[in-house]
Image 1: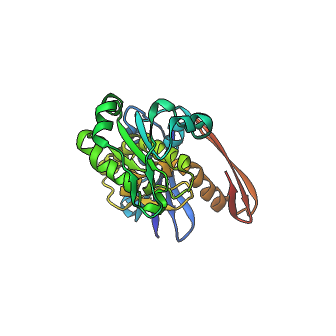
Image 2 (image 1 turned 60 degrees about the horizontal axis):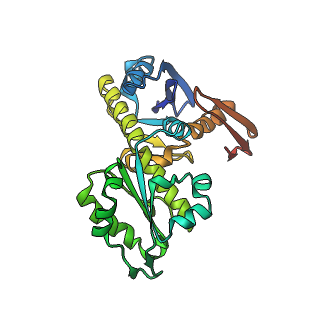
Image 3 (image 1 turned 90 degrees about the vertical axis):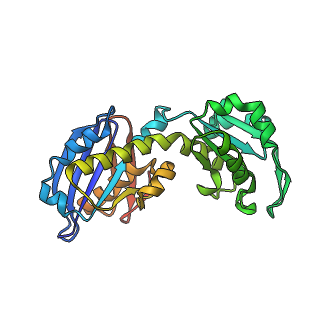
Length: 289
């Protein structure tokens, strides 16, 4: 047997399943209430339904969760700030960035800097003056994100310079938009960076709780996290890029339902305690969620 264990933590319930990849069948499963005050308790409760032999035989653990999804729907997460370089607040308001990109104006600081496409900085921000003028704004941040125009073409020189300078004054996590997305739309990249910063403690808590639960059960094997596209990533990357887990739960539902139902064309409905997701499968492949 080649056994893997899957754990899914939602806003209401936490599920665990042991799966035999050679026989393609479920060997054991368990469900427990999600304990928001300490997620490890609910995870341990779900794992208790899987025998010790199966837990010890597992070759890897795959995690999925809707915690990031729920945080977006419920507007939770940490207080994050975004430094947006290469535009002005006037532009943000003209395109209604708050409605169209989820960029709350009070959380965004615009710097009308100019960088060329080849990476040479035409007008680099005066970081010292910036900190002096906006120290209180930065101090309120639990995480800081940075995004600049033309970052994909110029090596994100201002993002890197900003992180290097600001990290000396503010001991919080920093997120650079260039590391998350190469979308030419700066507003989309900025929104992604800001959301990623907000979700850092959400996924940190989930992964830390999972590790505590696995340690209690004596389980020591690689842990992978399901991305929004259904692929897997390691713990270190998930800690840095929690935004990539936003559709983790629904992606797992699609793969699991498709495997168990053996249907080429179907509609998959995943009803949770906080959100409901619907996915369309055509020709055995998910085409829309």
